[in-house]
Image (cartoon, rainbow, N blue to C red; front, side, top):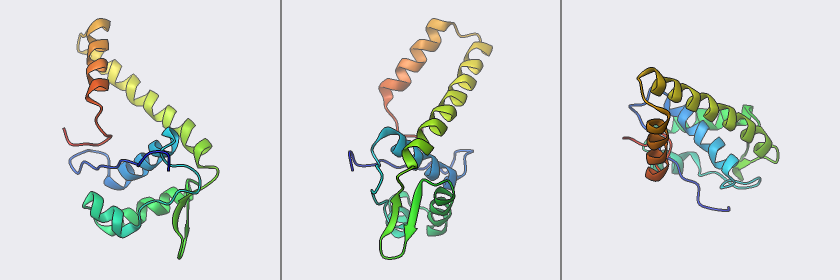
Length: 135
């Protein structure tokens, strides 16, 4: 692994926990912190790490397998596929653009100027929070 993957969940988020996990795995692949052949934490390990039900992790891993991001093999675990990078980069970029466009639209609708919006974005970058981290 290039860098240690980072995961967190926010149970108060309107985004389902299993989707948060799926998204974060895709973020980690897109960022190069998870590479083809890397193994994800086991269901038990991820469940303990995030303090969520193992069934939630199993659902996330199953969905990621259907997306072609991971492959599950008994005795080997859940590994990142060769096609994961191409599957994740475009999807993650599109998702981030959509979120950012929505956030900017909310900012402008609430009367913030472009300068104020840039300041808010700079502050968010400086905070360097993990996705779905509790505020």
